[in-house]
Amino acid sequence: MASSNGEQSSELLQAQAHVWNHIFNFINSMSLKCAIQLGIPDIIHRYGKPMTLDELVDALPNIKKGKSHGVYRLMRILTHSGFFVEENKGYWLTPTCRLLLKDGPYSTTPYVQATARSHFNEAMEHVSEWLQNEHQTAFEIAHGMTFWEYAGHYPMLNHLFNDSMANDSRLVSSILVRDCKHVFEGLNSMVDVAGGTGNVARAIAEAFPCLKCIVLDLPHVVAGLVGTQNLSYVVGDMFESIPSADAILLKWILHDWSDEDCVKILMKCKAAISSTNKGGKVIIIDMIMDNEKGDYKDIENKLFFDMVMMINTPGKERDEKEWAKLFQDAGFTHYKITPILGLRSNSDLSPTDTSQLDAIQAATSSLSSFNDIQHNESYGDEGINQTLSDINEPLVETEDGPSQNTERLELVVGCQGGGRARISLRWLRMVQACALEVEPQP
Image (cartoon, rainbow, N blue to C red; front, side, top):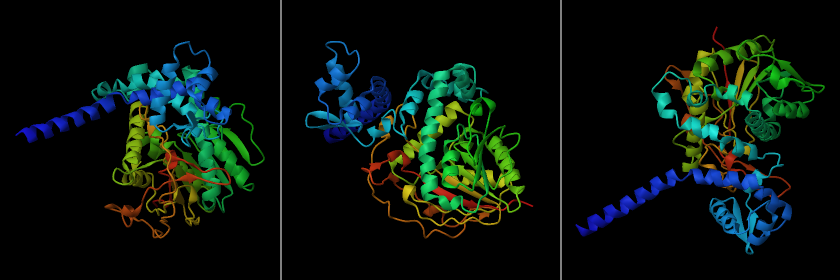
């Protein structure tokens, strides 16, 4: 009996610790936000070597006398979370923390600042109310307007959001032009729908000088933007009309919208590529949910992203079957999926003369919740070379849903390498590119 009571007590203590961990998880993201507000990552980076606590306190702006213990405690939890490391009695940056440098090309700092602001947390507090009424999102309950309307009223949030998307676009475009060139070979024209300032389209245009690239977005987005010889900006609404082109690019667009609106967008895309002489392709950069494959943190980050979509937009992150239904409802009946392994894929994805839908899943799981930013960890090359290139046979849409090999689509580690010191990107760990070869319904 005593042993039984002891085991029960141990289980209760573990359960209590688990609950406490979730209750206080917001401290991780708020601590990271504090470090960015103080400029700690950039200060240590500019110093060029590990900084002692005293050196760091002296370098920080306006730290009150007697508050150095607060800096120590802040650095202690951020070191525990994997953003800093102690070397020679000083603090140094981990590879993950280098993604937080303000001027880094792939900096996630704007995303940290945007998601850690009070408007998101306030929206989260209304989820239970949202489940019980007719409001479209919890964000609307909290703020009386949609997220997009809210961003239009608050320039700082709009600026942070646009910077977040721009930095992510730089990362995605570097992948596209380096590892997915075959997706664009043979194309004469491409429209980047809701492409913002056009970072992705610009990179593609530079990599393919003979490819005419068009960025389609709303007037306030593209106003004043200047194109190049093969890049132009067009004012328009994707729900109304999309210019004709060989390819239509949708980067992180469809997850913002309901199934009904996604079908409308895809039908406009189909009309745009069907009007060309040789047919075309739609390129989707988005996440594919899978609750069974990948490790615990990968799955958790995906679930976080889906909750972010649920709270702030009418959209969601979709699994493969949900994507397949969207394609079918939009008039696409046949597709082929070819996985691409992160940043080092050599998968052969040849364009065809029929209408083709290339869905490239760039599951950037960097800062996918307000309270779990600490999951942005650094990983090595494990599993990178476990190629999936043998999965080349088509996946045919049947009455029972997608068939053949769907269970073999895996999520793998993605890394950024090169001549410089390697920085493993945990937040690209789930990158998977899929080529979906489709045939429109008659």
